Length: 173
Image (cartoon, rainbow, N blue to C red):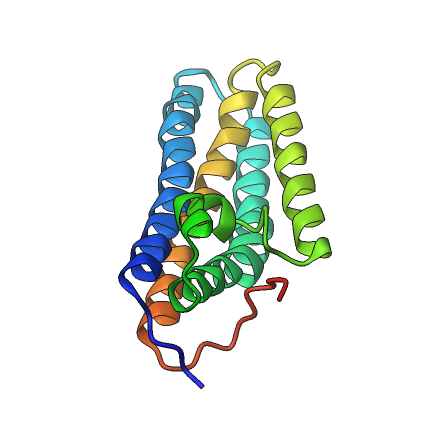
C-alpha cells in the first residue's frame, strides 16, 4: 500500500538528497585542484602506472561497488521512506537520516559510522603524502565521487519517481 507523501515528507526527502549530494560535491571540488596539481610534477613511468591502477581501482571499488551497488540505492530508498513516512526530526536531519546514521538497523548504523571513521582516517593519512602521489590518489577519489554523485542522482529519480522501488531503506520499525 503506497502512502501519500506530505509537504514535510517531500521537503525532507529533497533536503536529505540535496545535503548528501552537496557533501559529495564539496569533497569533489576540494580534491579536484590537488588531483590536477599532480600533473604539474614530472611523472615517471611508475607514476603513470599508479595513476591508471588507482583511478580504475577507485572507479570500480568506490564508484561501482561502493556507490552504485550499495550507498546510492539505499540512500535514495531512505529518502523515499522519509517522503512516505514524514517525521519532523528526520526531515530536519534528513542528510544524516539518508546516510543511515539513525533510525536504521543496527548493522546499517554500525556500517555507516565505521565507513565514515575509516574515510576520515584515510583522509588524514593521504594528507601526509607529497605530490604527485597525493594528487594521484585524489584523482582516483574524484573519479569515485563523481560516479557516486551521478549514481545517487539516477537512483534518486527512480526512487522518487517510480511507483515501485526495489531497494530497502534499512530502517527500524
